[in-house]
Amino acid sequence: MKKALVPGTFDPITNGHLDVITRASQIFDEVVVGVAASVGKGPKGPLFSLEERVQFARDATAHLDNVTVMCFNDLLVHFAEQIGANVVVKGLRAITDFEYEFQMTAANYRLNKNIETMFIMSPPEYMYLSSSIVREISSFDGNVSDLVPDGVEKALKQRFRDKL
Image (cartoon, rainbow, N blue to C red; front, side, top):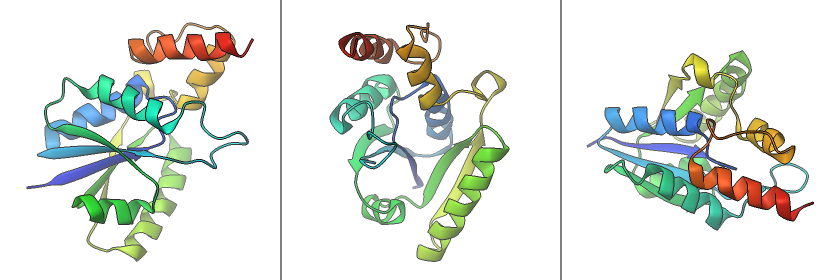
């Protein structure tokens, strides 16, 4: 049985993330969405708490029977070992993603040569999409309804309304 890990901070989860997770679920017997704590991300840390990000991912993937969502606060390779995943699946949007992911793959390979990395290319409609773009658009009351799941859109509106 092949188990894959799709890791990320998912702050918040986007339709681009869901595309990668859905496609991975069609390839692997079991997929774990690993939501990284990433407390040091950005100057202020993540917009949403780890618990919120995990719940968003669970809600967004509830229709996928072979997908589970877990949080982690460890090296990616160590988490993959803990859950028995032998493949890490990452989405690629552009050349800049490739450079970063290539470096991360090399580091992970050095730590554990038995864990493979597989890349899934984003379709054109998600090539530009990132959580940071979604946060930016939403912070200025822009429409993100076609970029994120409904629950995430509502949470973004509420979060930025509360910051005014």
